[in-house]
Image 1 (cartoon, helix red, strand yellow):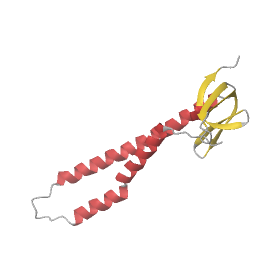
Image 2: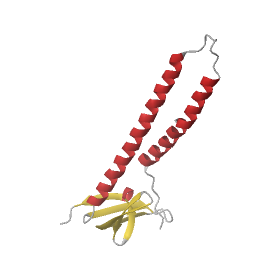
Image 3: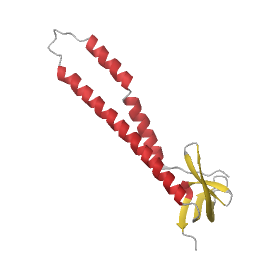
Image 4: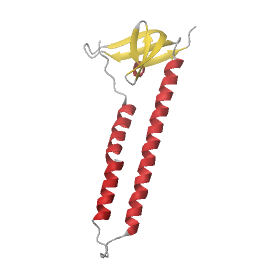
Length: 142
């Protein structure tokens, strides 16, 4: 019974971070900077020393943004973990579309445990593992 799901936030963040890391490869930037310095003509009027400093400042800014993005991703993971652990012992309803039958499947039960597998957070409910993205309702036990 495969479960189809797409977490748009994670998908966008992953795609954007891979694009940014490709654009800001530190080694590539330094190679380009060194080639530029080695091939410049010291007698040319076109040499602008402030342009290289501007590029270095932009590169430093991009590196800071990459580190900030990594920190935000880490906070997102910690938040996700905290939310999952807070579900243990609570009545939870899940709902998803079964990709084989294209029917909406729902199940309600008490979250028994939480597992972290391959970067994904799974809840154990009624002896089955479900991703957090299929949770449709959480209620306190009566």
